[in-house]
Image 1 (tube, rainbow, N blue to C red):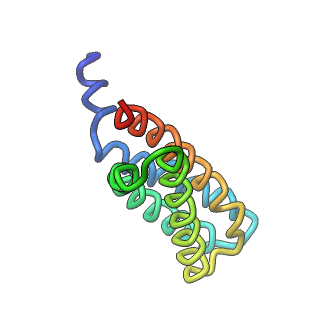
Image 2 (tube, helix red, strand yellow):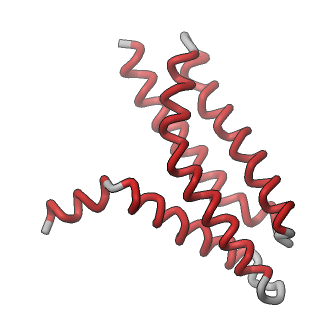
Length: 129
């Protein structure tokens, strides 16, 4: 039983599906005061973008952390990831007509930036050795 749980936790597909459902669900909640289908469309857009970012973020941090040295190595990759993620989220929600863009992207942006910072710190410490 424990081996199956570990396998699920390590599965990229599970991470992508989880990102889609949780962050898409957040977007529906953040836009709940608007008439349907706006909240649902916002959820699909956010879920899709979160799933794609989940697929890419680790690789991007790995690549960026190799490009920097010294103290830049610790803060530049997550900052760049945050800025690019912010731009993507703002653009996609603006194109989709999401009514509550800032509340919609606040939680996914916090989660992805936190992940980027923590993961980058662990990668950078290993690379500094």
